[in-house]
Image 1 (spheres, rainbow, N blue to C red):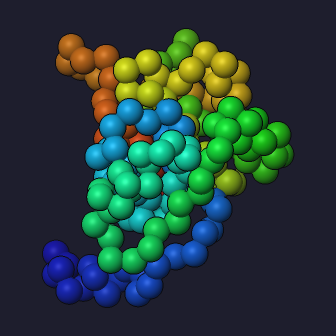
Image 2: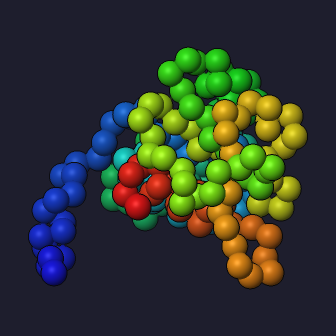
Length: 167
């Protein structure tokens, strides 16, 4: 078993700049606390966070961010337009975390080999219908209990770890 000191030595010594390889995109957030949690996961897996310029989002990120260094955040003015541009980029894969007929189970989701955007929907309503057509694929997180979904931070964290090849 490795000691905490050995684990820390293997981590990056400094913050990563924008690698633009893996991007978590909670484009319709509801709860600010989840954004801070998701930002910490982005740092852990080397991803960036794309968030809308809602008036409350910068404060939510500031409050929820316990990182000592600046994290990579992409500010999105028009979520649907931004998503369309990502989809139009031939080198980008757009994966939505959503229950859908042809969704891939999380366990079967391959790691990101090209630039990948992980789209996360509203915590109560999911990804809006007009955005579903902009996805290359959907991934579902199997659940055994009565709940129909996880919160954005938990769902996003699971998918990011899988896409980063760390699970």
